[in-house]
Image 1 (cartoon, rainbow, N blue to C red):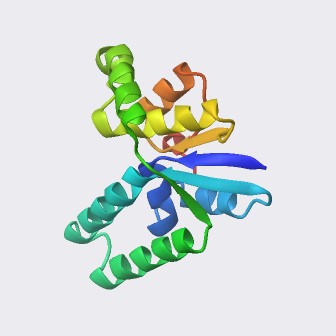
Image 2 (image 1 turned 45 degrees about the vertical axis):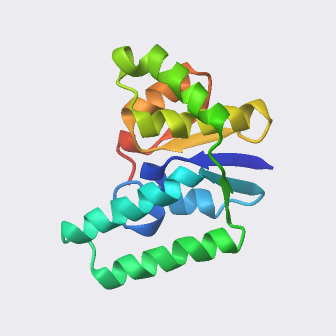
Length: 154
């Protein structure tokens, strides 16, 4: 079994067609894999999709359909949700202290990364999938295997 942790920017590519969506669909079609996201990703994805509607990159009907797909995938067990815990917040603070100035690690990305690192420590993460160069750089610096969709995949 291979465990993939998706940050929100990568997960969004499953619910809105954009650069990197083809690779995300390929990953989700692989056998013997588990897909994991932080609970934070659900909130961030709702916000990202709403922003696409406001920017007229997505219709309100498309937004509703994407939300429905997401919750079908979650409720069907296709995507597992990891709760945010106090230890994630503490680790996120440490990550920002280490990487906030030098690599631009931001709050929500630090929380996502803290979730991923905690999963790895438990043996429940093999690869982190991101679509954010800065987050991918920090995740790699923290020892995670990273697929970075911001690097120009179709």
